[in-house]
Length: 411
Image (tube, rainbow, N blue to C red; front, top):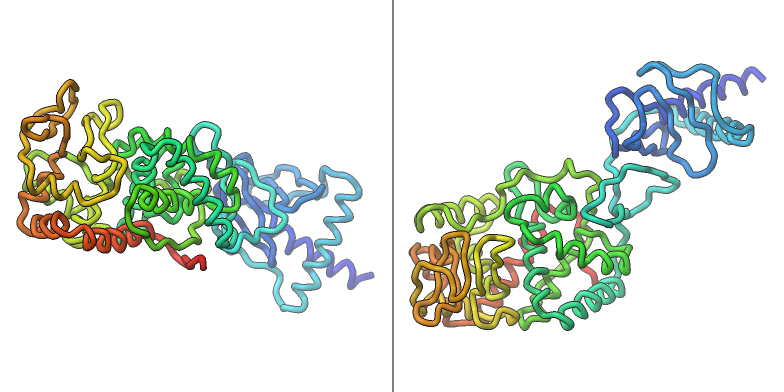
């Protein structure tokens, strides 16, 4: 009997260590006792106890922060028995390992998706009706094929969605900072309203909402993987090169992971020299060089600007739903003047093609031909679409993997 009581005391200490929510615990984190996990929900109060296990384990009554509660408990006798049994199990394990418990901070998701028996609330969600992200599972070829087919169907129905998918993938990745190792596509934070509110992401909330049914139809794929895959699918569907893509990104559960505004390129910085400096500051921060800056700028072959989003108006090329090297050909060979395209009112400083006035360029676009280092790559890509496709595919794949870890190829 004495041994049983001793084991029970050790077990309670171990299990109590598991369950206690300290005054410094943050919502959306896990605390571990001995080999088990506990989710601290957004509604958990300091000095309370919550089980992270499914079923009817008792919830302990509030007490002072840092102080174990007394004998008062809520729950059925069945729950109490379950609690005792778990305590004894933990005690036996503790005795075998010669220790009682330890605290280790854990992230709220794991790549293998094994968070058995967890029940949590207060998970970070995105805009509108977005549902909480699921823990990542191993992505299979069948999952990629299904998601790619769903994304491709949207583009086939409306090709104008393709350029915006590329922009979503680009902007979800282009926040990376190689010095602080923050940002990038790893956590899918662009689905949070806090990041969508950034100036460079104007209008992307519509695409996030549009892709939500695709996410729910492919629920085992994370938002972070889905958004980057959307860019890859769109490039290919619109006539561009195949872009290598790997899976394994794990969604953030909290908007606190959103990086500060200002990490994406701005279109007008006062002069062409300042525009060139700005592009280098933004892209060098991510680890790119001048050649890769120009190659990635070739994505402007797709899409158009809208006054209600960016304040700029018009398409870069006459084929905005076809991926080609025409962006570079026009930069190199067309004449450009300040002004808005014909029949439109612009809110920001931009350029239009002389004569027809049907196409536009941003100040940072023209900076590519005003800067000698950038301009030599513009000339290469204007004359050689195959070379552009090769270099873009490599640079875009690199962009989509910024800030990631433990990615794997899906054979």
